[in-house]
Picture 1 (cartoon, one colour):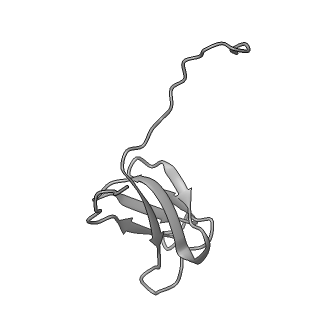
Picture 2: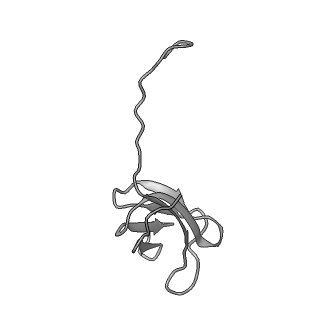
Length: 90
């Protein structure tokens, strides 16, 4: 535990890629449930689904596969493929 005024070395896990706001719908036009978990290819839980199927996610690259999962049954998940991201502009 560092004391007041001390300098401590800290390592942070960083993500490269872009940020996306995805307005998701399933094949039958229904929305994934609010609170469904979204995983990337590294099986890291990046984010959860918000209202109206919105997913705000960072560290995304073209070609990434995202898994949206809200239960353990086969029919309680869907996947997304990230295609053709444009370079970020400032």
